[in-house]
Image (cartoon, rainbow, N blue to C red; front, side, top):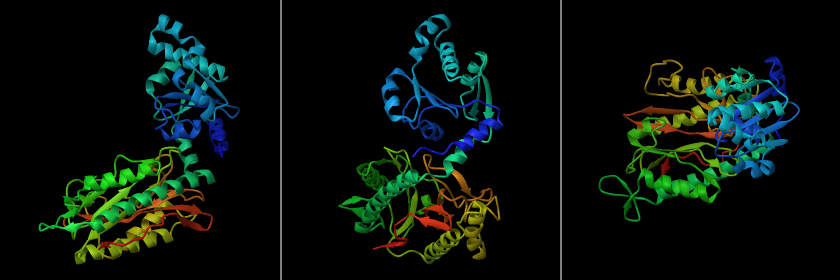
Length: 392
């Protein structure tokens, strides 16, 4: 199902622009979304209400014709790039080619996102193309509301995520504890790196990839984005945060669980219970018409009522609840909407994570994260994984 771009058409009218132009490879979520094409090198996508056109290298020409959503696919050779290089050099020749491509599309005034390459924008202007910057980045808002097909893509990625989490938890469960309190498995130390390998191998078996898995134990877990390293220990929190990308569709999922091998400290158990409560409260605030700020407030209130610091109450705190409650997920792992003090209105069809947590080097860290779909009457939790701290 192709995305509904009527909002983009209206936005172009408001900018008095004839087309929306992107110059990026497909790791740029806007590029992948608008073009429907996955390519490792930058290419041009020109969208008008009448047609979608791509300018790609000769190497990608065949695939672009069959795999993209484009109505028209062009190559630099179609605009005599070789002769232009002889006359102007390779850089300026590219600007001439791009301008000729846009002329072919029937446009001479384009809107571009803020992160459009400045050199390319200046080069197009030198060729007589008017370039206006879309400071609203309207495609990000359009992408935030998923089609049924996109929702299925994310569900599929989440299934892979849960398989990887189960493999990681099973490794911790099967581990023994040595005389120094370290986890061992099959005679060797069970390290963060070893668990990451288990996770990433499982994801590959399910058609997904991830290079930055978080498996952080003890004090490392007190930093929300510490990737984790070294041996895992008994009696300490082990935060596992998995956010894979499906290699075929490009869509992500995101889930976090916190485990403890053996008996947790009273403080850790208390923090875990509070974080379960914060998750439940935040989920209870997820519905169309409420804002990301409302969801964030619901989580913060649980912690604040327990006497724990939050960034909402104290923007300088370095312990307690020190991040937002969640974010949108799609072709990018972090996209709109935001569940924070600045979070805007929630809309049916958005996919968001809800991930409260507590952090302090004296305790470690606790985070629990589910991924949900905003629906017309609340939300659908597409996370099917238990929430349990102790792993025996």
